[in-house]
Length: 459
Image (cartoon, rainbow, N blue to C red; front, side):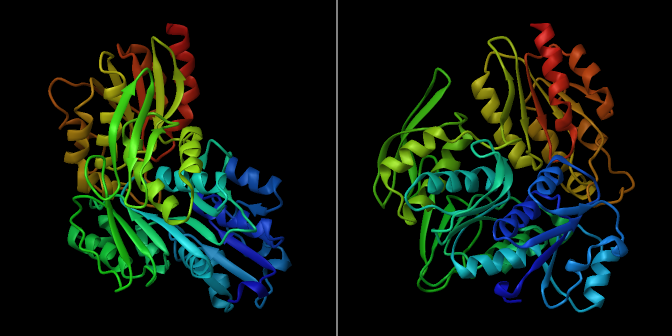
């Protein structure tokens, strides 16, 4: 569908973090936006406040007439929606233009210059950094992000002057194959979503295909040491990055007094004394990748230095909810073993003399089945671990797969507990830890305020 002919857009799964960003884009363009989601949330309420029509019952009859005009309505859905969803079936059977969220993003990246961040982990923080740097510079950008940025309180940035479009290139369901990047970062290729891909080799091949979609005049910035063999077109410039080595890397790293500074070494012009606004070690690499994309886009050294220091982070990405000299509480979206390892590494660096406890909610039965040993290995670096029931998301239970698979393989020295999420407050009260981190992509982050209150009373 030609976007210029669209008068209405209907989203099935509008409350998703990625879907809501696109919904906001069309709202800002003055187009009618409506949609369905399974549950009411803070995101859906914000969208309703901004002018979207939203309901929570899968019922075609309740959809307003202006979203049933076939020649003027685009229907967008998320892959998490089941194929027998009544509203989705209705729009398909009636011959509406029905597209996945990734297809819409693909159209947008072809219309402008797509700055895309791909990888098993690090996508949201890195893409949010890119968006902040460009937004604070003379370049500007539109951005569709997978998290709520603390700088802007939203997952969407709009510019009517810039043709740069920052997006997360999501490998789930091969969604990133719809994109046409101008420049792309690949942060990591640790196997994931094996319910979709089947094997690690198929997962890597999907990334390889993604690299072939980069424009002929484009750029690929790939993390050092990945198994991936890119399949870029002839005119694409390839760079590498890494904390110690790579075309883009860090030197003169200074960590202390709650701050991190480093020098950004770049083939496009090095920049001294970069300060991280969110001073955790993993953000050194995230920052290197973000600054590489920013330099390619024409951001100046001074603009970049200022923006990196003022980046406040993303909700649920190494997100401090309480921080005193005695106790601390963080929330982190990490839900893959490699992500958890990096998160644990960073928190141990910050609190080397403190006792640390993780409260982990595994995300998906298939991911738990495929990586329970790796989860146990990463979590065993901590002093205490509480494991709650698996968050199923789109999946049905798998016999024999539960959080106990991880629990039983934690190292002998780790103090551990299995519990239901409703028992989390009692588990925290019984713990000897000083620092707590809530891990996972499910819904246990809602207990952050309760835990914070418990820790404040302890102090």
